[in-house]
Length: 444
Image (cartoon, rainbow, N blue to C red; front, side, top):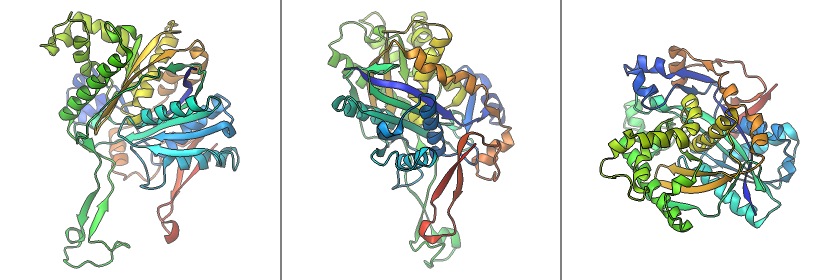
């Protein structure tokens, strides 16, 4: 029985800052970012957008473009590291918003939950749904990845920012891609990138050694939520390489594959914190799995070789195109790469039916999963409604001053007027029983 992705839809922030503008303001050579890292634009949320909004918009597009009967959906599983509540999952918001739009009670018997493991949480959710459908062949499930990648102003991660969601219908006999049952994992608990609880004492704020009640806070230490992570870029890159290498060769062993595994893959779909991350990380695997044809002692020379550049152009570049235009989507990055590769193939009228894609997923902290899938005969029909690059071309450019105001949360009014989309309507501040509750609405 074939199990996989039957339909895809996406929603990304419709505002962007050109990387060349950011480079100029940060005194960085634009070519370092554009040609070195493959970055052209970074998407950024408007004041009415958050991880729930992106997820709800992507899910609504999926439902409407593919006429999905929500009463037939058994699970809505969300992968995200941008949760808005330490208890209530994003998935519970999605079920409520879908019922708000399409009818009360439609998802009453649908299981909802979030998966969090940095950028690989969406892949974890997807694998879980595959297992469920394998046991329940008539079941239909939905996986949504949604995130906002935000970094401190002037930091080494600022130019990789992005925001958006990808929604996927998972079922038996899928139209787009069916996945192999062999999945390889490589895990090690590390601190290459994380979002810890941060605290500040009342003494530092008030200058007093006393511990008075302050805004309802009785504890002397006040917890601070910050979207921006603690990270070590070079160390994180090494972790990415180590985990991915381990999982890649573990999969090859599971398969009993003789020869070079990546040669059997038409395209390679990777987690892309920035567009060229994959090509910068993969030269080691390219050399190690070459049956001794490539010297592994000098990876810099390998990366510059004609053979590797040809490999990149054929197997990696199609998945990179969208990443250049949207930035890092964290859990959604690998699925945006899949959308990109399929959309490029659709534009070029490429024949993908029966071809195998290799997937190299990674999440900091750290874990990699490597697996593969076969493109199905109806992939063109299923992908046609996405209009990936046409949609991305409609993004509105931000000026630098507005970008910084949005980043600092100084901007109080929306940059764009929302239309035919979900928005964050308000956050409860008056009712002490519901303090902090977030309410959303659909704008026609």
